[in-house]
Length: 540
Ligand SMILES: Cc1cc2nc3c(=O)[nH]c(=O)nc-3n(C[C@H](O)[C@H](O)[C@H](O)COP(=O)(O)OP(=O)(O)OC[C@H]3O[C@@H](n4cnc5c(N)ncnc54)[C@H](O)[C@@H]3O)c2cc1C
Image (cartoon, rainbow, N blue to C red; front, side, top):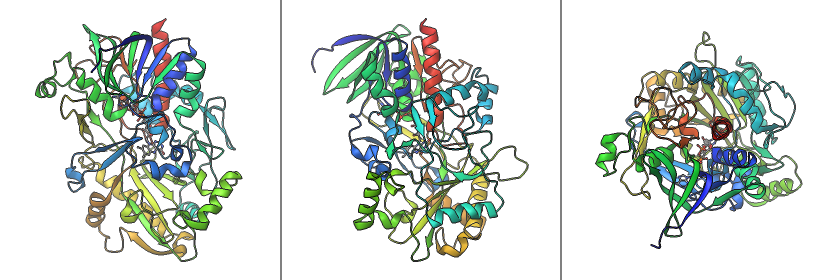
């Protein structure tokens, strides 16, 4: 190991991911010098940029972290592999591209818990600032049209997709032309961060332009190993680059944006975390903060899979040979095509009981089916999948360092279905999906339900299916919970400053106090936007 080299910027951001790209842009735009440390390589892999490449990147260890959860007692002692982005753009470079903000009530609840400035009215301007919504049904009081992140409704219509949509209407769900507008409830087309056939990540929309235009220095293959402190003030970051230990210093602040598993890990490695855990791994405690790594949340998703009648088309038939070539030609010609879409096509946001003010479950239609309900390996018959999840599960878990070696993955477990309140909502969602499969016009297009299949009928049998086959939706949040109290029950305050120290904020999906009723990228981008504003204000 050579002698550590030090250099200095106004801000050092750990992670070049979803939130970080936006923070880097905003700080650079405000005239600050910024160093971004990203553990992964640049986002050059072409599968990142072609939307259909999604399934190819998921298990590529060069551009993803391949974390494995501890076995969950609520899910038949299974452990689940969690891919997370490890490249510029972070998980926004490998995710399913669905743009879904959630419900006003999600953010109003954050504010009611003491997080002043995080009500829906407070955060709506930040959602709007990020996006450039393209298309029809755009209500400018909810939607942004001047932002850098293009959001579109892509087209690749199939008979199955239309039938699912019509069956949902026939089953009584209201049509909703814009679930990111006044109300989330109902059925409609998913919106995604895709523009002219290309994925829009926060690297392509924010980070790359920022490094070209502003004083933003992006260092790839740079693994932050700990935060450097002088007393209780964060002054820089220790990182490893090409086998060398280095230091980069921050004049103003260090911003931790390494994602829901790596952010708490880095805090713990740096002496901020539950004292007994730190002691167990020989780490000198700087702040005994019990909440670091707690409150881990995710959306757990059992998937109903059906085999469609012969002759019908789903994605399954287009992934090789001439059909794929045909789609590639259409992609080049910018005609509706398979390569340019996110597999999540139609949403149903429903209520498990009519008295509820807001939907509490999701049905997600994808015109593709994966072997044994897993993402990655497509069936060779025409098939489709209806993903189901509960929007705001009560179950929560933990992230804990496994050792004091920065190269070791942390132990973690979202503890799916560990809270007894969660099973009933999930059960209602699975039954709702089955009802749609039995409703015309979809019913006549189905040859057979493949998963769970006709053997699973009773509540117990369906829950058994969920526990044994349910997958993750990859929506990990909450492990550095935002909250007012500095008594150890929260990690950051409502300005995202880490309790008990100075000069350090966490700005990524990990700060969410509760999981929003949505896929989590849009909320993470909003956190990046709002976090950047607070950082700039406090630096004045
Ligand atoms: C497969 C998949 C599909 C998904 N689909 C959707 C979807 O369709 N819609 C949606 O809204 N949400 C989706 N999500 C969730 C959403 O993308 C994430 O919630 C969000 O992107 C998280 O952003 P983040 O900024 O918190 O972390 P990330 O975007 O993961 O950024 C963290 C970055 O920090 C880097 N990093 C970590 N540790 C270090 C270190 N020690 N040193 C330096 N760098 C480090 C990482 O490599 C990474 O680039 C999906 C997630 C996955 C995994």
